[in-house]
Length: 426
Image 1 (cartoon, rainbow, N blue to C red):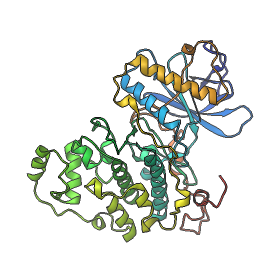
Image 2 (tube, helix red, strand yellow; image 1 turned 60 degrees about the vertical axis):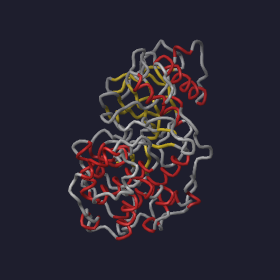
Image 3 (cartoon, rainbow, N blue to C red; image 1 turned 90 degrees about the horizontal axis):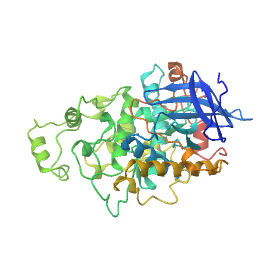
Image 4 (cartoon, helix red, strand yellow; image 1 turned 90 degrees about the vertical axis):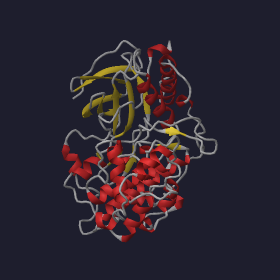
């Protein structure tokens, strides 16, 4: 139960306690239930005055403090800039953002019941229909994100939020990157993005530039993990990860290695030749259509991978695919200058405050007095951080998925599927 409190920083906000942790929130919100806690942040459920629907409020500790590390600050700013412009059913969008005088950053989004990692790790049965519906939603969200010239760069099961009727949302855009593929990226993209098990070969091989295809590879790894109930490639380090991929795929062709640094080509050529293993031998119970789509996503050469849009049209997803309900972004990003510009922390911090004030204005909290007294919200959490969908205990992970007739083996009648197909007003 939340307890009332006070805050002297700004009369637009008040401070309330949830499980002994203070949350500085707009006065309309009342935090009352803890959802999760990590090394760098906490998440609570809250309700607005007169509302019964819950929202999730994530508090990122010290994300905009005076001495915050520039890397964490840029991550927060990057996500604020992107999520202000991304609005899609399969993207975990924010509806509000602010900061506190203590330098904490807050984000408001929908409450979700669990995440893909918890579901895969649970005893919850997953049919191929479940896998089909989940992969469809990931690709549907990716088609939209990619159409905005944005690469997520950190797709993994814990960054896919789920609710009880199987609706899925992509979350955590803290490592996302806006690109202009026609004009080039403007510089070297860092290799240390994407959690290792979901990292595309071109990143493992230190490609100086990479494309949206890295997200398709990650989605393929997640698809395989859904089918197998364990990760596809569990490398101990960067080299071992590459070795596992090559062991399964076989020795790359000269054409596939054409983009790779000559020194790395030579290193790969010293490895024992391998014919690889078929996906059928690894996932023997999967349908031919499922394995064909998976093979089209897990191509060593990024040029040979399907795009998200092409994957949506694959026969495996034919029962769900509807181009009319798979929107693209109306105005693609052309640049995200914080990547190339040599910005110091005071500049980044000021930009975060500016972004936050936009949310204050949107939500009826116009600035009162000096802007130095207010702050905003974003997600600067790392791999060890709490997920927005954490439900407080492990029970949520095994909650029966997809409320449907017990005699049905299909997801066609789920509420989420109906909405995606336009059978129900949003």
